[in-house]
Image (cartoon, rainbow, N blue to C red):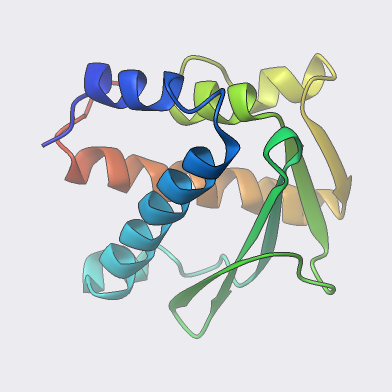
Length: 145
């Protein structure tokens, strides 16, 4: 099982290598999607989150989106043309928020996290990502908040 220190070490090593960053983040997200879609309790957490959630990690040239529809979670790399909300990160900011070293809300208020689109969808984006990554961390034995 991965703990917070192991994850920190992995993530810190990704900052200088975009290809490795994309590969590892893609694997983590795919694992989370499979976990959620194959666990009834977790799929129930998706209720009320229907929509498309676009993420851009600009300095890695990595974009991905989630779509939640009919209690299923879908994930694709790339740009979704109909995403009503988009969130723009740097690799370092993405990792620090993922590891709960920084708050996405606070970074947005400081102007370091850029967003575009429907803010009500943005609130869902924040809540959905918290749920998604919380379950990934719990699955890997990291229940530190």
